[in-house]
Length: 296
Image (cartoon, rainbow, N blue to C red; front, side, top):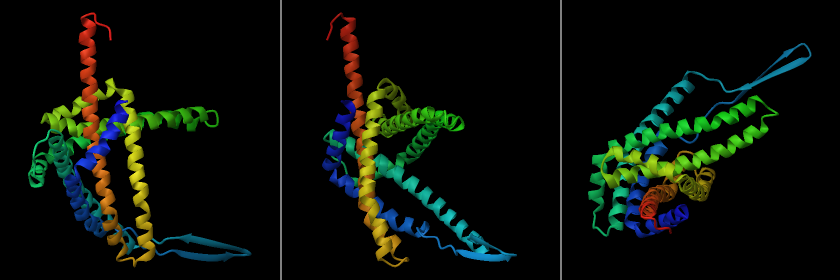
């Protein structure tokens, strides 16, 4: 029930914090043209076909020539991707802390200004980046361990098909758990006020494995639903508009959905944090009553 309650509360928090959504929308609209400019969606490759005849046999070769111009273009794309990634990480960290702070303040009935919470985000964004980086590494480790049965099953094919199936189930479970776990980190940091508090999420997540995994599943479904609704926009704009205009129009049209996605995930983290804190408090009460010999 904890996962379902938190998932429901996430929607409620998004609706109650329309002002914060507009702030996230501002972030998405700002990043949209930068991403379209630095990361082109269409890379022009020249496709060639050559043929030669050896006796009665005609040999055809297909491929894309990798010349100096192509390599230069790829280098420029990688540079653009690197620049965009750095900017996106910093800006995202600032807004993630600020929006999370704003949600907590709204829940507590406190007044706040958008400029004020952004300043808070500016002060604390290095901590957010550090926490997200460490949690990202942890997720990679968890997923790598979960992938071991799949690799062994593939090596042992066809007898290993059962192992592959079980490995896939394990992988889905690990993905859901790590997703639920990762949403707790920044709310812990914002609420407690220090980076070390973010890693308390491990304790509560492992004490509530089913709730954490369940919330991860629900959150993943919500994220996929938003992506599914937004994804046709890029296809339609690429088909309907000129190549030099389509990426920018597509980025701007998808910005509201990107903002909704960020807002939903960040609000979901706060909702799950509050729910799991409530569950922990109830467990403490049960333990104290059990020590007194009172059965519930």
